[in-house]
Length: 156
Image 1: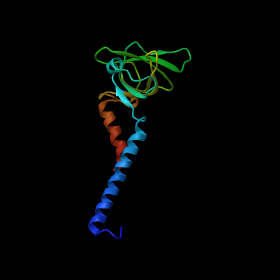
Image 2: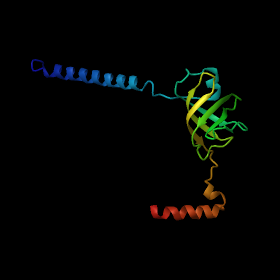
Image 3: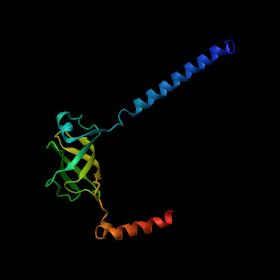
Image 4: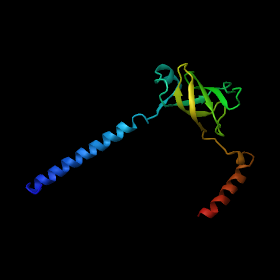
């Protein structure tokens, strides 16, 4: 590059930098293509199901009366529903989150099986804006505020 003028040297360096940046972006996108986890609502999953085994997330409400523990004692089955009355059967083996109950919000990570059952590998329970921890449920509003104040005194 010693034979090039300074103006041309800068131009060549800029072109090389752009090629390297574009290559790095394409390489990152290509390597993450299978790591992306799409989010479906029950009606979307039923209308346009993903390929069997493709990792996705299913979000909705745990249908009332659908929660059952299977004979092995570890596996549960339930249905996830939405406001449009679409229901997707879900099966999960493992420890349930504390907030997981019928009628609560849930995000299930997993994949759709060939028979149309969603096989969850992870459950994330969601709570509403009125959530109160178990420890504070029996306390009055004044007692809870006092406890919160006492626990934040050391943080100031």
